[in-house]
Length: 317
Ligand code: SF4
Image 1 (cartoon, rainbow, N blue to C red):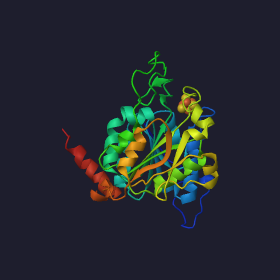
Image 2: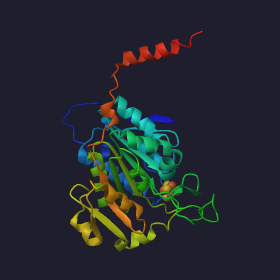
Image 3: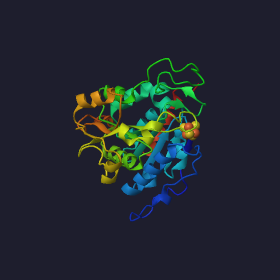
Image 4: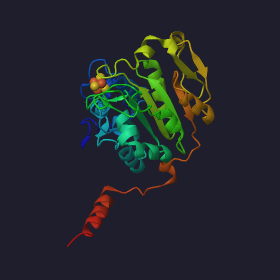
């Protein structure tokens, strides 16, 4: 587990203008062609667009290829334990509601070992953006079946093919009480990816975004057809969803009007896996947010030391 922060995170004058340089951390070490690069670029662009102060922004991750994300951002970051990104991020937001909190997880991290946290973070609806980068495999551990691996897909742990139908993260999230924002995008469509991240950031509550992510090393063929044939994709359109640029509409001729306020329709769209649907499936800002309904006392640094010492003194012998 490691805490990281940038040496430049010194609050200075208010009239600063941020550029990409202000958010670019270490050189990304993902494989060439990995979809994670595209998500990193989109996230950095979002921060520039929204002019988020690096010292007021934190990226939290667990374990997996995509979880190296915080190292590549020049913001605060926490690269933690497998599956535990969401409780860490919840703690951060509860104690520092002024921070912009982003969570980056892989499919294994989020819907396997971290599944319990994913369910409860969705229900707690704490204000943050949660990105699940779904490459359908455990990449860091060299091609092990994950919950979203398609049935029959061969891996090192299930060489005869995945035994079970893949878990559907959209359908599952939409089934969780108090879910408030569920979207899907694809990293190989940068304009859509960026617009979706922007919609998620502007949402007040827990914004869950599944990002379809290519892994050219272990699951190269899974999204190949969708990448090559834009007509296999439906873009969900609505003024309350993702704003699809005209240029994109020409490339992706299939659009489907969908009102994100309609939960039943969102569930139907999520359940139908015969086509890839990209956009905001569901959004409801009227749901209670735990970070607003449960107020934690704001302690000074001195208070925290005192409380910690009092706790430790209980075990004095
Ligand atoms: Fe990306 Fe796959 Fe390489 Fe991991 S193994 S960095 S997911 S391409």
